[in-house]
Image (cartoon, rainbow, N blue to C red):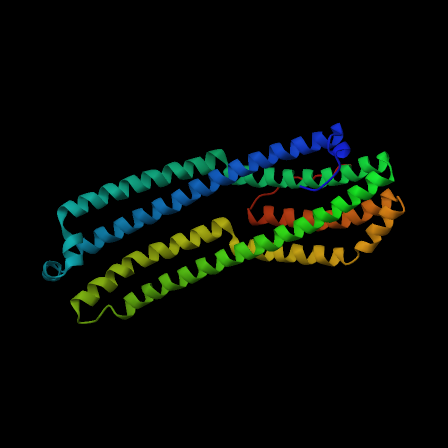
Length: 295
């Protein structure tokens, strides 16, 4: 929240934009949470169904002699375990179907993205309107709102830096986990011919489990787009940093009570942020109509 004066923040024009922004932001958060919930549940359910199916086949195809002498094979070869795994598989597939229906019919991804973009657009419009209102109220208010806008830019850059770090770390963790699972799958194939029945059973079981887990990690990574978002935020931060290097032009405009000059600098900041918003929508595979920045 930028530190505009009470006289600016209570202005009906400022409040109207702020209320519209808050409404869209609330919708975006709700849709985002539901999207992540149902996407995560869908991935977990399909993974469990795949694991159950793999274990069923693993038990059915097991060598009878090996099944009696090895705990893992004996466990998954029993009829009651087959029945339980079939039930688990059925429930998981039903859950996955429900989640897929909710994601398709409720369009949480599109709602999240479009409302986030509207909220961010209104945030920029609010900053522009605040400077306009302050200019009409006199030089002191104009100077105060100029300082508030510089704080706004600094806050945006800090947010971008924080989000870049978070998404980059998450992308690395998912990539590492995927590499480990892929390595286990490869190990299962390479060591499948070992004489040790215990080793063979464990490796074979890992061979059943790991591909499903790799698929789950890949699906979640695609849904969240951590690596791409980290790159997007880094690029936007760099663009804003380059613009902030020319902040003296904004300071001069504020000192000279030059609204047009101050807004020209604002527009450069807004353009960099609009590019970020468009990039985010592109990552979400969502398009939206271009909106003016108001004012």
